[in-house]
Image 1 (spheres, each protein chain N blue to C red):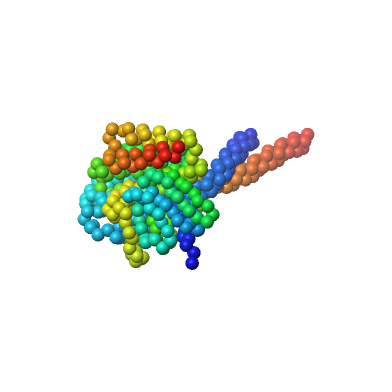
Image 2: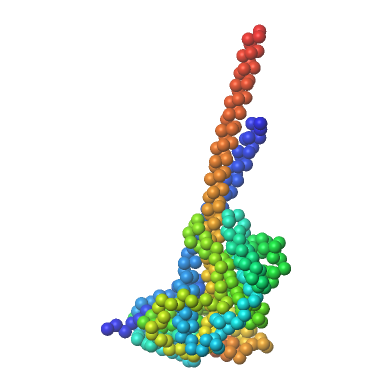
Length: 130
Length: 291
C-alpha cells in the first residue's frame, strides 16, 4: 500500500500546485505546526504565516505562505491561499520587501490583537529565512 | 444624388472604419483567450472555498450566534448593490445588460419600500446610473490602471463592503455582473453575497464530519470575509471574459456591416459612373446628329 496522497494548492488566479505523491505535508496551522500523513482524519483549519513543507519521492519543496485555509478529506489535501511563494524563488530583495510591509503594518497604532499576532508571526518567519 | 467624388470618399471612409473594427475584433479575441483562461483557472479556488463554507455552515450547531456575514443582520431594510461593469465602451450590450438587470432590481426594491445604496465598479456603469440614481451611489471604484483583473483589487472592494456591513450601513448585499457562457452569450447575474445563500447544500450533506482547529465559529468568521473577496474576484474574472467576448462579437458584426455597406456603395458608385458615361455618349451622338 502506498503511503502517498494528493495535495493541491490553489490561489485565486490559478491552481498553483498539484502533486499526487506527497508523503508528508507540514503546514503552519493557526494553533501550531501540523504534520499531515496519509489517512489523516478530515480536518479544516486555517494558516498563519509560515512555511509549508511538502515531502515527496520527487523531492522536498518549501513554500512561504501568509494566510490560507487547509482542508483534508479522503486523502486529498487542499490549501487555499492568496499569497504563496516558492522558497527557491523568494530572493533576498523580495523577502526584504515583504518584511518591510509587515513591519509597517505592525507599527500601525490601531491594529487589533489578532492581526498584530499574525503580523508578528510574519515578521518572525521572514527574519528566520535570512 | 451624391456626386462620384462624394461616393468615393464615403467608400474610403467606411473602409477605414472597417479596418478599425477588424483590428479591435482581433485584439478582443486575443484578450478574450487570456481572460477566459484566467476565469477558468480561478474557478477551483472559489468552488473549493464554497465547499468548505457549505461544510462548515451545515456543521454549525448554534445558528443564533453564527457570524453576521452568514446569518445577516436580522433585518432586510437597506440593500447594497455592487454593480460591476467595464471601464471601456464599444462592447455591444455588455454594460447595458447589467444595468438593465440592476435597474429592474432597483425598481423592485423601491416598490417594496426598501432603501437602496449603490457601489459602482467600472466607469461605464457609473456613467449610466449617475443620471437616474446619482443620489444613491455611495461609492465609485474604477480599476482603469490595472490591466487584468487581479485579486488585490477584488480584496479592496471586499474590504470596503465588509467595513460598511460592520458599520451597519446595509443589511443585504448583492453583486451584479455578467457570467461568461460563451462568446455570444453572457448572462447578467444578480448574486447575493451577504447574508450568504447556503440553500443548495442539500445533495451531499457531509457524511463524514470534520475535525476543526480552532472551532467552527472562529474558522467561519475568518473565512467569510475572504469568501466575499473571492466572490467579487470571481465576478471580476467572469466580467472581464464577458466584456472581451461581447466586444469581439460586437466588432465582428460591425466589420460585417461595414463590408455590406462598402458593397452597396460600390454598386451605387458604378451605376452613377455608368450613367455619367451614357449621358456623355448621348450628348455626343445627338450633337453629331444635329450637324
